[in-house]
Amino acid sequence: MLRPMRPRFPPLAAWLAAAGALVIASRPARAQADTARAAARPDTSATRPVHFRVLGVFDEETGEPIEGADVSDMLTHLTTRTTKTGTAAVFFADTGGTVVTIKKLGYQPALLAVPMSLADSTPVTTTLLRMGHLLPTIVVVGGHAVWLGKSDTSTTLRRDGFYERRLTSAAPSTAFITGDKIQGLMLVSDAHYFGRGICEGNVYIDGVHVLLPRRTGHVLNEGIDALVSPFDVAGIETYTTTDLPAGAPHTDPGAGALDIGASMAAAAMANASGTIASSGCVTFIWLTR
Image (tube, rainbow, N blue to C red; front, top):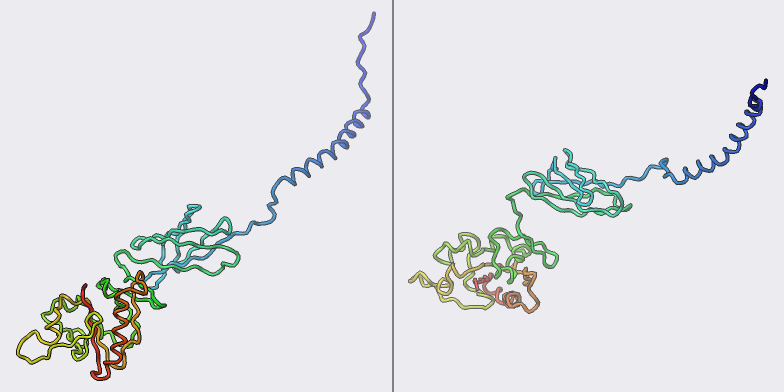
């Protein structure tokens, strides 16, 4: 009777030797794969630098810091809020800078371009204006900032340099009277209630030297009142010998060198310097033309 043949297996030692050979053979390949993966993976050991600038927000009128103002990056749409000191840190993904919007309830919103580079390390400050509070218009001519009030809207006075002389000359504020101050009066000579009286012995009307009728006291409209009514006056300026300005710069930024008003004022100032000695004063009256 034939017996079934049993399969012969290699001895245990042979199995162990073969397994060891496979492990040794796979080590170089695995090491190479690990090295390739490590080279492809970004290096997280070095921390990427964070770029930011400190932004300070203050009240335009009081100068006090504004707390709780929303500062939004228009590029990333990230928003931060100012602290009690009115400051906030504006972060950047790169060094290109950005434009931020600043909003706070009760204030007019503002836009601010914030540059960012390695050289830009100082804080950036800006101001917000309260709702309903508009600052006067500013006209800058010849390095001077001319603040125009709510009633300083006369294009004639801007063209003739009235507003700038009011700021830069040696004359006091009482030497300058705008037409809206006297248009409710009966006589131009009543302007002395609002400032200096008119120097009727030496008067220029729209840059032209005029001789006024003498006052006799018999009729009401004598002197300057015989020629001009309060409703015709845009502005009046009266100087003494010590505060007459040397020139007549104009504040109209669109006016050229041949502007009629500027030339008229310049000629009047030059002529007045020769006539003021005898009378001790001079008055310039600018009409609403």
